Image (cartoon, rainbow, N blue to C red; front, side, top):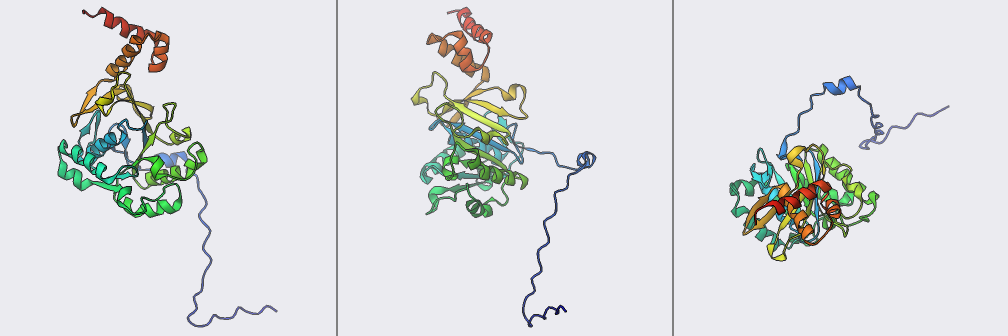
Length: 314
């Protein structure tokens, strides 16, 4: 005969087993299409939408931080920067793991001087700089570091991580598995309603360093390269091109040249930047076929550009 379970002494807690997690239930296509999902608005159109993941990469010293500071100010103030426009102000968190705090402060102060709404920028843009904390910023490669950062993300619309090598410090760059935790974190931010822009270094081959698997879930990947006629005295001057541009079409997807000169940004059209590369390579006696491969265009385009210069008077 089975004895009944004895009644626990008074004051003891009774722990009930937790219910099993709900099973994943697929949704019928008809029901899915009926969902009232809000459309995504642009934070910095057309390249950064709400709840999106993107990346900017370039070689060291090309001007990545200058660029993302300009992007942050435009998004935070609802203004334009280069060929991009923010339709309304949003909350931006710039997370910097590399620069000395005083150097970052100098760059931000210089950028704010040419800002149309400096007070709005100061209200909407927040900074997390590794140099301001005794132990630096947490390592976002692991759940513990991600949990440490979580309270600082409340209320933010756009997170800019500058850069991956300093903020994600464990794992191997060339292994896709090492990226899995960071990718899961990024997707979690997207589900939470935030956009994330990763800043990364280029490798020796000129492409983003490490596993190409990083780009799998990214919507926009921007590459910065030096023009072939670049001089070190020119500072932050580069060609902006897209290696992945989901949702970008026509002129929006064309490369263009940007130059930070005397505290102000200057633009050249995508065709001008490309043509400058073609002519510079032609001056070095590079064959038209090799130029076409380097610039990623057709041989006929290379021939037209070179012939166009020869046809000009003088």
